[in-house]
Image: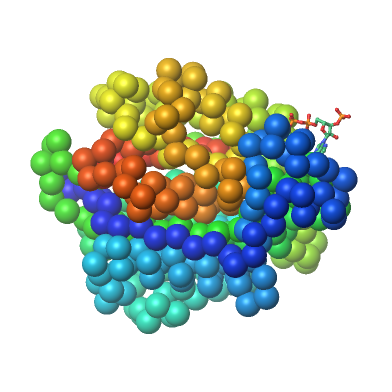
Length: 321
Ligand code: UT7
């Protein structure tokens, strides 16, 4: 059967790291509050010359190298972001040009923190459908550029970064590698729980991120636990078969509550929220890349990827590495 097989990953973070204590000098907050409520201790913030596309290009280059490929092998780029360099063209086309590619499809998907899961699902369908052979799937964000730095309830939570996967369509055995199953959801009923109060067509401004944190938290745990159960049921695996969960990194307490609902120990959950904060669409591939490169995630492992974000949007993918 044709599956989208993971070939390699890469990631990138901005140069500047900002600690909770440094933030507390700018807004009315404290290291203690941020740590206790979220598990975050620091985040990376893009500086001059660093944009969503520059971070994406760095992550994509590393992913290609890790996969033993070059841009000449790639025939599809799907990039998840809610902080594109410009309204158009798509950041994916900027990345394509910077990497030296041309001709093949390159486009962005906007699903906020679920952006990487949506990009992965889209690329997986295109690979299995024969529209491409080797895809770069990227999650990249500069959330710092849409934060209201006067709003302590949101500005302490986010960071910038990028992560990328290379996937190849391959004919594999039933018990072979690849994406085994995915599920994506959206519910626009909750569009006002987490949103940006500006945009080209409404205000002609970029706007700032707004969030009803408690509501998002409640829905995140319920929705994520359900979609994880659904993907396990669909693929026929028990939760105990999972080697690693690579969740969207919004809040340590969400990761903990979701793992508990599935009866999984936190020793099976890859955690980067403490050092990266919430990097939206970048968080899943950033966390995956860290665990892949340090040897925690190995070939043959069963890895669950999951995310939930504005919209609401949410989803999960089960991958045999
Ligand atoms: O990536 C997309 C998904 N996003 C998420 O998953 C985020 C989900 N939500 C959360 O992670 C949590 O709801 C937050 C971390 C955002 C907030 O934690 P919380 O325990 O729900 O706190 P809260 O918003 O209910 O605020 C509690 C108190 C409030 O003070 P009062 O009204 O109780 O006096 C806030 O004003 O904490 C105050 N507060 C702060 N204090 C110090 C809010 N932000 C801060 C802050 N520093 N940065």
